[in-house]
Length: 537
Image (cartoon, rainbow, N blue to C red):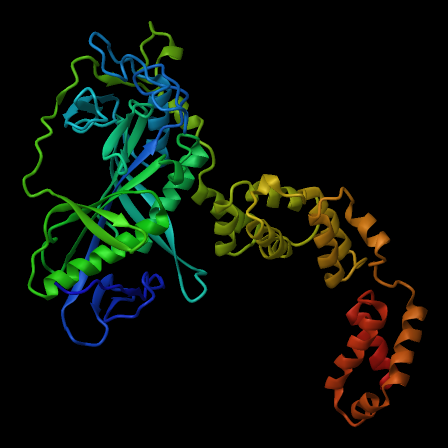
């Protein structure tokens, strides 16, 4: 078998995972992988589909009243149903159904007014009942789509619109958690997670590389967080991704796929997919065969590892869930007159509650404020930053394109540097608005504004105008005083004056710099230049 390979994606611009440059590359604009050194004329297409498990944002589990809480003491949130004691029956959470419907609407899905639950049988220690309740055959939502954008280019500032089809969204319950104690060679079971509500979002194989898949997952994560249907915290296991990956040559059927399970980071997802594509190409280029298997991603080595063979396909023995009737939901036209609307799930009512979705918000920001598309992505992708930006805009007459520069280059940079969220910032929108108003009015220079912003960030409770007055950062307004300073600089630099008089006006910048040094940056550069030009002409 060929040694592990890593591509440089010329379309996405992704850097090598293992820091090496090898012979395979992703061909720009063609969705194809090929030999970089021309050693093979064969070209390959990567095919990627995703199955995403999103934990529903709910205080209770899908079929029981047990609380949902991350990192609670082991087995402290387990009901009789969760423990699979005889005689217990599932009761479906209305809130979880509404969350699934809202997610389906946001992803342009068709909502099935009648869906059904199935039992999926398999046997693990953390699944005490021996089956999972899911919606494999008749899910709650089908046939949707997710629009996302791929950042490409040297500075990742060019956005390419993409679309991935959503096959279905199904409600299902999570299993418990197995904790492997290698030191004692034993496995401990925590059933706190057993029965927690999940949405399984199945994406069609419309992606071709790791960066596309990662971008789609990030956009989905942002949509779920905007809706409030899932926190989508991958670090806490609230969003887990299984990637189905295969390769084939143009014009040929799809190849045998391998599944990489339980990836909990968008960055690791991109690495796992690109590695697996190259592994499969390497195997095929050397005459081998791809196994239909389940693999895991080792983030330390950047490689996927075989877990179990899927050639002998497991029979899950799907059967209708006998303890749950079909799930029936309604719209305004089909609600029975003799039923309480509060006890029903109404598709039209949920549609009215949909918030402004990320893609719509980006379009509005670009159209309303004239900012760049890549800046709209930065604003929307950072929680709370759009509200901060628009609050600043409301309180100042400064051009939005100038405001966005301050927010991205100064405000957001300091947030990232200090690992803070927007709501943890010591600089409020009103404080930044006051500073920008002083700058726009010509009361302070741009360099002084930077100093004031640095003082505001210290969070000492002072306003921008107080900082300007205390540190004497305001621009000199006395024209006669400024003329005297300029005359003094001219008299103190005869060599530069001589060069200017000989026609070398570029030296004038040096004199402007000297005036700024004397005034400690408190002189308006345009005014200083005009005075110097008048005196030297």
